[in-house]
Amino acid sequence: MMARTPLIAGNWKMNLNHLEAIALVQKIAFALPAKYFDKVDVTVIPPFTDIRSVQTVVDGDKLLLTYGAQDLSAHDSGAFTGEISGAFLAKLGCTYVVVGHSERRTMHAETDEVVLAKTKAALKHGLTPIVCIGEGLDIREAGEHVAYNVTQLKGSLAGLSAEEVGKVVIAYEPVWAIGTGRVASAQDAQEVCSAVRGALAEISDDATADSVRVLYGGSVNAKNVGDIVGQTDVDGALVGGASLKSDEFATLSAIAAGGPLP
Ligand SMILES: O=C(CO)COP(=O)(O)O
Image (cartoon, rainbow, N blue to C red; front, side):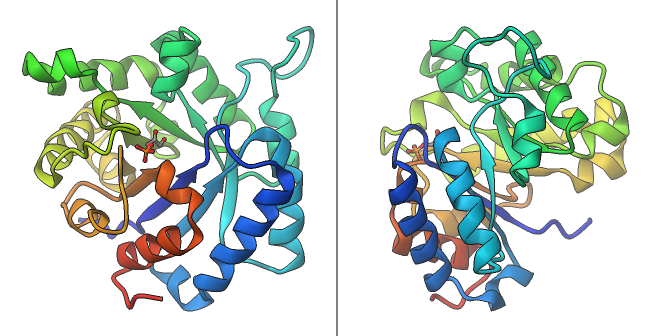
């Protein structure tokens, strides 16, 4: 099996203005010295309006953490009021862009087709899409979560070449575990992440599937991250609430790196 560097991504959602963003990035960087970055990739995903400020701190202080955006347009430019092009994000030095987060699938009616178009736009502009999938509680209780996630994955990546599949990150985020404090068990995360890897092999090939990072997200914190990233097919976490606290985010990144604690 290929050694996959774990990725800890902090999705700030609609929290923190650009001044607060600068302060948080500086605190995370202070708590997480360079030695950790051989063993874990750490990224922050602030609101669009913070990205230029985050870029300035990361570049100015030569920080090893990266940053990204929470969404992008499927289009490159034009009459799309309120949308943000992947070209703009690339120009700002973004590494990642979250695509198809359940909050966008639910509140903005993003279908797998829309998520696929955004994934393609991200790849076109040299950004790494973090493609989110995840089932609601009704699907989980009906025992249909594995099939549901595989279908969502295949729909969100339909028609991509193996080379393109090799450039994405997948985040499995069960909707019932987001912001609820109700974390999926490490075994629950492994069950779906392993099915995701199997589905990736079907749509590309074994070597590609083996190289893609599959993250878990949903109420991840410093206490539960060790168990979760200890699973064979879980390669990191997409962290919401706990990513807004510098000490906790640094600690959980250090745990994903295999220690020591900062
Ligand atoms: O949605 C999430 C990250 O994208 C998870 O959020 P929480 O960690 O706050 O549950």
